[in-house]
Image 1 (tube, one colour):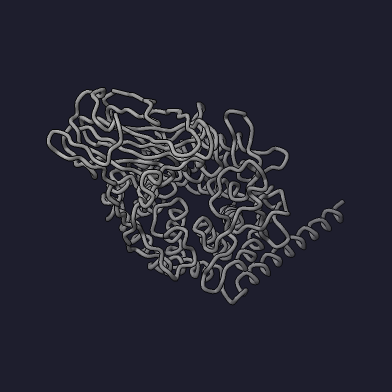
Image 2 (cartoon, one colour; image 1 turned 180 degrees about the vertical axis):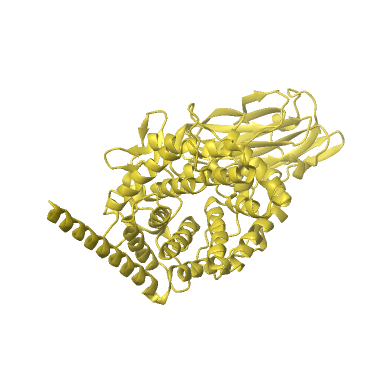
Amino acid sequence: MNALKHAGEVRLRALTMMAAITCACALAQAQTSNNRAPLAVVKSVADKIINDTSFEFKLVPQKTELGVQFVDFRRTLGGGQPATGYALSFITSAKDTTVAFGLSNSDGAKIWLNDRLVFRRAASRPAELSEVSYDRFAFQDTLRLALQKGANKLLVKIVTQREPWIFFLRPITPAGDLEGAVQFSLKPLAPDLTAAWLCLGPFPASDLDAEFAPEKEFQPFYRYENKTLAWTAPPQNMLAELVVPPKATYKREPYSDWHYALGAAMMTLLHLADESGEQRYAEFAKKYCDFILAHYEAFAWQYHEQHAFRGSYHRLFRRTMLDDTGAPALPFVELLSRERSEKYQAFVAPIAEYVLRQQVRLPDGSFCRPEPEPNTVWADDLFMSGPFLLRMGKITGERIYFDEAARQIPKFAALLWDKKKQLFHHGWFSATQKNSVALWGRANGWMSWATSEALLHLPSDHPSRAKILKIFREHVASLAKYQSASGLWHQVLDHPESYEETSCSAMFVLAMARGVRNGWIDKQYKENALRGWQAIEKKIEADGTVHGICRGTGIGEELDFYFNRATFDHDPRGLGAVITAGIEVAKLSKR
């Protein structure tokens, strides 16, 4: 028996030594590929972010965004006094149909379709409109209009007793998305006009039912109280828009904008400065934050007063989801934890209030969204909320932030975990009590990154820590089984026919490397992390350009939606993860 025991111990030592040699070889290979160590690789990624960022603006004409029609009578007819104004357009339809329209307006309103009164509301109220989720708005009223094939004359009357003097109108589907089958224009009246509306007024702010000439017939101009009133096209607003440098690889969004992916990326630049000792990365992240603060008021005005629903920084002022709040603010809370600056504190406070108390939730407190169906839980939102809350807890010392971040992880895991595949679904639908179709790579990436953040920042005595550690370990163990021979992971993890995707692979590498380094998981996963990093490095050009990052992705109804999702070079949705993965692998190599 002693001989058998001794032989077993010798065999165990041999296996341990072989594993160590394998890891060391993998690390050496990762460091020598292209003659660059992990930290040098991610510095090139960060340098490209810096080189491809501009802190400049250009003027662009405002266009109709997301199909939301609006007429601000103040800009056309003047404001400051109670008044009545009219707006005229034509709705063109390819067939006889009935379409729903969302409507928000100030004070009293009447609407005529083809000279027939279809809406009347005399209530005294301000116009209220908010984007509640991507491309979906909350309107004050919904009206259903029976449209005939061809052009349908639409006349809107607004009687205002206050500022602003405005209305919003949008054709919508039953789900609240844009109904694109109808169009607004003035072509039937004036083919050369590019504007969609004409305005007339001001008339006195009398009773809503007092008739003025435009309600009786259309004329090019009218005589009223010894004055001539003519139809006028609203003036063209000009918007300030962030510049994307012509040399930039990624041109779909400027890196200087407010976005969850950019928040993650800028936070990682601060971490890169810590690890590399090169403060220029921290200085750039601070420049990004200070630039936003310096222009906050101007862009708040542009969003709220000019209704630039897709203008620069619109997500900062939309503030109706975690994508707009927790994750984009990560560099601000990271800086606040280092500087305790009053300007960062004042900026972060309302965002923290939103994440903690205003975000939509299920009855049990789980964060959710109103899309694609009401009360849908998204795996993404664990990262959009948790790392921000954890840092707020460290900054303020208030337990409520730690508790909120910690309670979300088991709730998300319970709803999204697939017991058979041992992976997380992208979403969970409250209405059907079922999961979405895909075990999407980046959804699992957000879960693994967010969970590792909790283990990194939660107090050591937090009562949820053991439960979170168990979730993390089970997830890592399963992820290791789905790693491809190349070292990367697939866009849909359990479908090897889907393409290998960079951002989720980076998230898994950072979680594994971080887990091994901190003793949360077995050392055997070091080999998975190193193989993954070696494969990721092959996706990175010498100039730092990262390939193979899946574009922004909603919850799809079919697997083909994920299979066919485009990838973009240097998409910010993967840059923070790639930089963090490199930092974690570099730290792991020091052990």
